[in-house]
Amino acid sequence: MSNFEAVHQTPSKTSEYIAYNITQILKFMLNIFYGTKYAKRAVILETIAAVPGMVAGMLNHLKALRRLRDDEGWIRELLDEAENERMHLMIFLEVAKPTWVERTLVLLGQGAFLVVYTLLYILSSKTAHRVVGYFEEEACKSYTEFLEKIENGEVENVAAPAIAISYYKLAEDARLMDVILLIREDEAKHRDRNHEFADAFENNDLPSHQQ
Image 1 (spheres, helix red, strand yellow):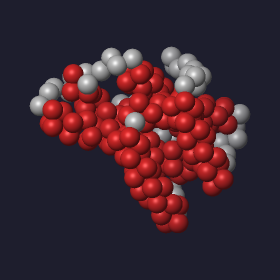
Image 2: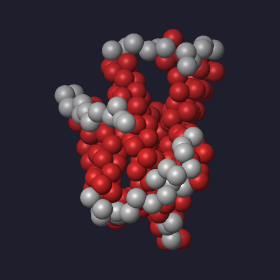
Image 3: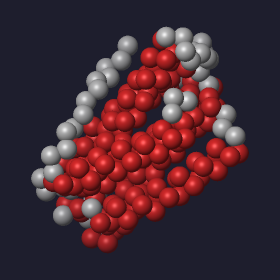
């Protein structure tokens, strides 16, 4: 069973259009390399997705220290997001078995996105969170397409990797579809929370250390 709901926040402000276009550029580049190779596509998705939570958590940690104020739970939530995305990556590394060339691409993509996202977060935290919200929308679409391919028999519903069974506390006979359903649920939560974070910056409804 899944409570997943596909939603999209339509851009209405300049910062939102910028965030949305950044996401579409990333999507275009991803399609060039992997197209419908969903497992390998997921490796790239997750290595990039694991960056924002860590960057935002670190910068908010330093801001809270600098201002001598409590973070009101933001840091822990952002770091938990980063950890969750890292586990998604570990799972899909087992599924996709990327070559050393593909692993090199992953590292290059991760490094480039780390620099760009850090600068973006410093310049506009609101836009940075909106980027992640839109990025997670695309991740949800990608995993929905992945599930449809499995349902149609175009992708084999292989046994779930042991690391996924352990992380999600699944039954020993769990399959890949079970794992993807849970990962999509995670991405939907990150989607909604990052849009909420961006809205908080927009409405100045922030923790005391952010103001």
